Image (cartoon, rainbow, N blue to C red; front, side):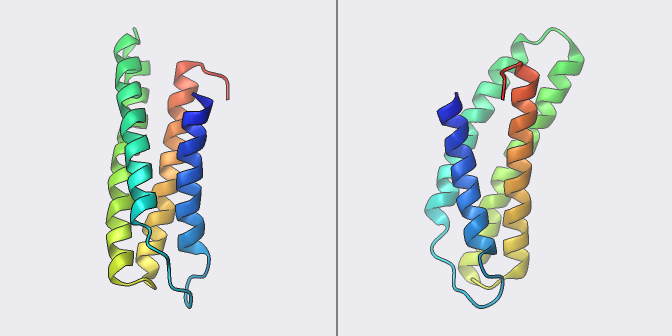
Amino acid sequence: MDQFLESIADAVSQLVLLSESDTGSMQLTNLGPGAQAVVQATQLLIGIGEEIKGKFVTSDMKDKMEEAINGIKLSSEEIMQSVALLQQDQFSAPGRKKLAKAAKIILSSTVMAIQLTGIPL
């Protein structure tokens, strides 16, 4: 599990660093492969979260896990949208901001899901 989470964090961090490395003058490298890696990893995480959610007894825990899963799903889509913006215009400030925000939500939602499972961080 640690390696899996580390791979998500690494991929997300790389996207953020690339997008925020120079907000005005530096051309970005192709973010597509990194974004695809994040999407693939988050799809696995969503599947695990759905499986764990089904094992929760209380509706409160199920609702919180659903919130975490939705945050990961929506942010994963946002990453792909922001990469599309940045492929059209590598200097797009909205694309960079959207990418950074989505990455942060993926990380925070992942932490929320882990806390719900009781796995020590």
